[in-house]
Length: 125
Image (cartoon, rainbow, N blue to C red; front, side, top):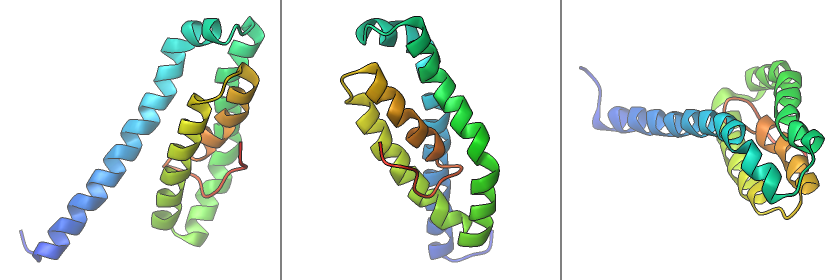
């Protein structure tokens, strides 16, 4: 293997950040699916509100994937990935601290559009 020590460190940093992003993205998607009955009971959400919690993720993701892919081509994939990871983390924390189903639903699009694979700065929740 040829390369300097700095090249190897950079490669490990890239692998670490990318791995964390993929892990968070996958965990985020499947966690709400599994926890939906508990979340709905906690918020006293109706079946419709509970469905919208999941549906808002899917709608935003589907609608923005092409636009953010193009934006990554223009701005740069690295920058967009890192900003998206930061926004995703903050939006996730804010969504978890919301007291009502409506406010939690309003944060879901931010989290979905800010998933590390895609976003720059989504609307604030």
